Length: 213
Ligand code: 3PG
Image (cartoon, rainbow, N blue to C red; front, side, top):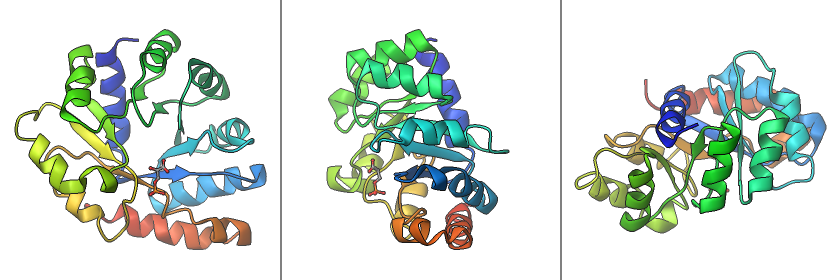
């Protein structure tokens, strides 16, 4: 899969909703009800981070939730990419953009949202054909002000900023021309998952889904 094809897929996924939930699933039993709660609230694209022992099984459990598009985040190695694809991930997200991750996603045919935070990194990805990129960690790397500035010389790259994004600051990002959506963990708080309060998560998702009509 070429970078252009990957970015075309990433573009479609990022346009599904204003927010991509970033999920840290610690209990496999939470995976399916969590995905159902978020999709019901209006957030279909879900990023399951490969940070917990059950993350790959969580992707498997969520992959056939109706209306959902489940991807894998925190891809750090080529082995992560292979495992994520095998588990049923339909897209991948990486905090940065190492050559090994990029090659593995091309080989596996996994649409990739590669991470960048400087003009040089953004340009290096653009040279390869990646026009849709993750900006991480967003708040710590200059936030919406940075993205507004970079949109002037490099308008052909669109971003999904993630890291420190909240319901409160999301509109600052979403109002920019070069922002497709934001990513964030606030829509799936650990306490609500532990309580099994899926209705609360649906409410948070619905609130997030309304961010940009
Ligand atoms: C992450 O990878 O942790 C995401 O960027 C989520 O960041 P957040 O918890 O600040 O939303």
